[in-house]
Structure formats: C-alpha cells, structure tokens
Image (cartoon, rainbow, N blue to C red; front, side, top):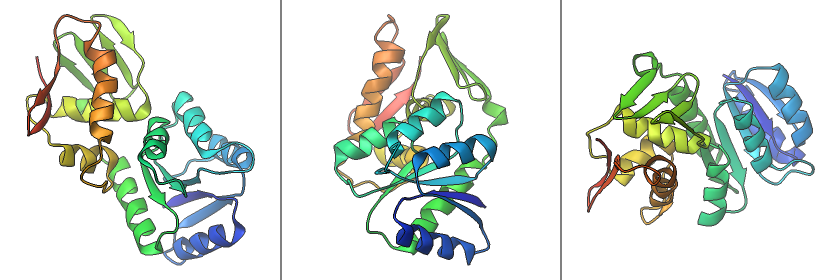
Length: 224
C-alpha cells in the first residue's frame, strides 16, 4: 500500500513510518496540513493516517477540503479527543475511521488493512441505484430525488449507498457500523441514529413518501 502519515509529532510519525515500512509499504510523511494537501493533490495514496490536531490546518478541515474536491481516499483519523461529539464531528467531515491515542500499532495496522480492503471492493454492478424517485450514482456521488439534487457528506453518502444496495433488507446498527464505518464502536453509541436522522432530513422530510424506515428493535431499512 501507499500510505500518507500526517502527524506533527516527529517521534510518533517516525514510529508509525517504521512499522509500516517494515511491512514493505510505501510510506510518506507530512508534519503539517499544508504539506499534506500538497502531497494529496500531486500523488495518489491508498490510505491517509491523519492527526486531528495539526499546527496549521487541522485534520477536520483537511477532510472537508478533500471530500469537497471529490477526493475519496480512505482517511483514518488519529485523535486524542475520544468523546462521541468529537468522533461524530470527525466522521461527519468525511473521515472513514478513527483511532484514539495512545494506540497499539497492531490495531492501527488492522484498521489500515480493513480500510484498504473496503476501498478496493468493486461496485460497478451498483453504479446507479433507483428506488422510487430516489437515484444514487456511486461513481459521481450524485444523489437526486424527484429530480432535486441532494447534497450529502461523504459519510452520509456511504450510509445511504449501503442502505440502497441492501434495499428491502433490515440492517441492524451493528451491521451498519461494521460495513459503513468498519470500526468497533461501543455498543451504546448513537452515531447510527444521528446519521439516520441526518439522512431523513435530506432524503425524506421534503417529500410525501418516506423511504427510510425504523424497524423497532431490529434496525433500519430503505424501501418504497
């Protein structure tokens, strides 16, 4: 894999770089956000390991800029801020996963591998999905309903897409966490409910027919 480590602590970035280099990965390091954005604009990476607290442009803003530029490289946030609010803020900015400091390299390695595998899955059979008057284009990330363009964050789109390719199937919170975030949240987390609410406001609220349904005690399903 070709990895980019964005971390302003030289000792930590050196340890991470050494660990992945020993596994024969191609590793680049940026000590600040400006350098990271320059590297990302000129090179292609398989996974980005991104510290939240950087001296110039913070990791959250970097996520937002990348997603706004239609760059959907998998991003793993490294953060010392482990509260639910901070985690949701990071994921809502476009990150795919997070790891709270301090962490063990073995867990970091496992998460990076999981992100790489998921990014490599081919989705051509589901490039365009139509459910009622909702249309989802997985290549362009364009979502429309009744002809109206709906703007979604990267994580909102990923959640909607997973619901759509499994339409008519009830998906538990655990399934959504495993397949959309690919991380192990605490079982009592409300992140799924928060993001379902985000989607409902954009996908369902302005329209008469509701497509996102709650199945009490079971999970959620997208259906006509």
